Image 1 (tube, one colour):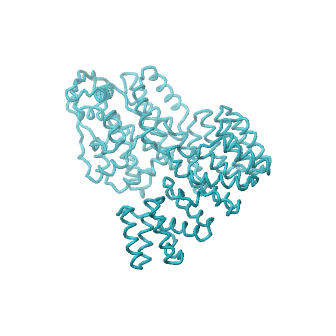
Image 2 (cartoon, rainbow, N blue to C red):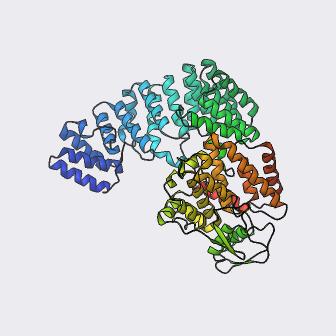
Image 3 (tube, rainbow, N blue to C red):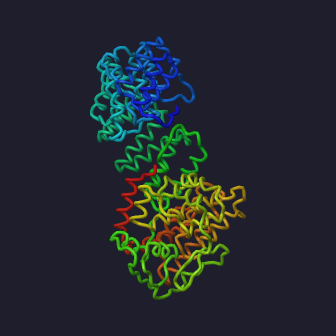
Length: 605
């Protein structure tokens, strides 16, 4: 269903429709009317003109054709004509299709849909199917702000239940819609009546969901268990029971239910997704999430979308978001942004910090003075490299590669974000950088463009400029994963460059490159041993250096290691020790507030 960009207002389209109608040009009148209806679906004048077109054409439905790319206004106009010709069920089917296309538009807010007498003209089973179509088209639950355009369907449900008070399928479907729209008490009442009229698996599921939304967990579980008794082979209900138990902290019982489902069908998608999520909640082992990602990749035709992997990764370092930088330079940068310190704010460092941090401070106008040096020298690569992005004059770092092209800068500005659903989703999103030249990708790492003039860009640039730089670096390195993918991994340019960046000067780029390698291991099991070896070696090196001096990227690299597939037990233990050792010294209060604001304003599903 397509929707053209509105070039004219509804009033203008309506005026053109009337002119065409007056001249007898019904096809053009219908086209302009459909455009007006798409913009103002409840405007009385639009419906009056539609009635005139119907009268002039004898109710010709072909004026509003359906097809593979039918215009939504034509679909809705046809729905109204069908209702006017005595075929309201067919009309409702088309209105629901429009709702699925654009749920935020009040397609059904017209008198014939909400009229009490409509319910008596509809077969109750057909009405139930229509309500189920609405449920399938909207979130569960529907956000409060998005409910008003859907309220006509709930009015239809009320009238239908009044007209058919003992129809179990209708009662259950009406309950499902009421629950989605926040009418939980009504949902419980209707579902309970439906089950009393005719106990069934579906009825008990609807009742269980209604009880669960009402916070009546014990009764919800009892209803869902009765549903299992009706149909022991419906494993989706097992997963629902397990999820409900887990939500109330009864993880052991939840896993028992999932194991029962997997005993019946080890490949049933709902049970597999739920099982991996619950096992991760039990022990925090990322191997469960990696196994789930493998299952998703190997089963692209699952029956429906699942959010278990994204739910587990949300808000977790590197699994679902960039880890905020730490260090004296970053603290000064954030402090300057918070207090509007402005250019000239003095910052004294006892040793150079990551060059990306130093450059971000300089770009913000901070007056940075480095008073000493540390060993091992943080200005030197940790291993010999041909991909050195920085050179130093004393404690001042400068890029060695040119700035990226304007096209590369614009592409990364459109893509860079501090959060993602999970590593494979980040990999997929970065395909937009696949055609960039290597010089552009490297240039982005040391010449990050300004944040975009968007709400996200203003928050990142205004409250934590370091986070924007890190976003650009992360997405540039993800772009490197898509560079020359025809080359075998072991000898590929993408692997060579990322590994050299990992072992380069101690910098935020180190983290971004290591995240890209970890992401590669998530999406390609064949590279996991190689990536795990790189991660283990790099973390061991970090641990050695931390014995001599602070390493600002140490904790972040430890979290990256814990996100890596196939990591050995010794490196896992080392990662935990680095995190535990730094936890007492960390002060995440301001960062938590920033992340809460970012999550609220710019969620990534």
